[in-house]
Image (cartoon, one colour):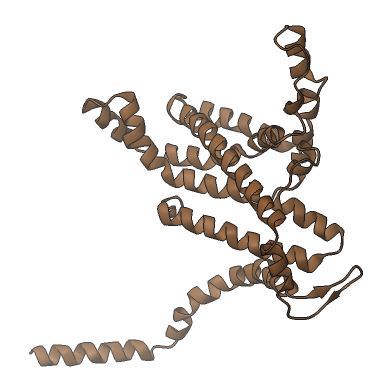
Length: 304
């Protein structure tokens, strides 16, 4: 009886394989992914491949020459000025990340747990997005009349007698760069953290409180661990944006500070495209390593 059953099941499998249309069903998933693959290939992989190719070319003051040279990379990685520029960019990324994470978490925490109605949560969240209705450049430049030597802050401090003369380092300094970046990119940290906090089951918090946990223990042992995926996504957003920002560094530092993106912009203005492409490849690898490290520590698949 068992042999008959086994023979019947084998015959059934063979008949199913012979059914028309089974091959199309097998490749249906590949056909569905084909449009996305073409879009990513045309607008992401191909430009990156072209940049990597140009990074090995030769150039002079007038044009580029197709070649295969490693000079652009040796000049980039062998220059102490370049290393200082990369370290300065990483410094900006670290400071802005820490400040946006601190501010973004508490804003998201307030919206998620202290605002009771969903309608009010959405209203306040939309209020946070209002500045994004204007250009980044306009929002960045708006700090100049506030932080300038005769700006609002210095005028208020001098008139109140707090300082005898205007504070010079408020504008055209690293402080101004960090302040403008925090203003520009905090929402990119608020949004994923808020989304994560809204998914936390409130019964977990109630259970922790019923077990005798204090508010601080609930925060550190329940909320923060469950909010790590949102923090990781926000970190990826903020770090990549800061690493690629050149306009904020150029304007808010008054040309007194540098970043990798600003260095590449200056190289392109001098028609040094292969050198800029080499820096772009190095910067891309650095950012990908940072993102890989974040994904290694935190599993963000829960948010996807």
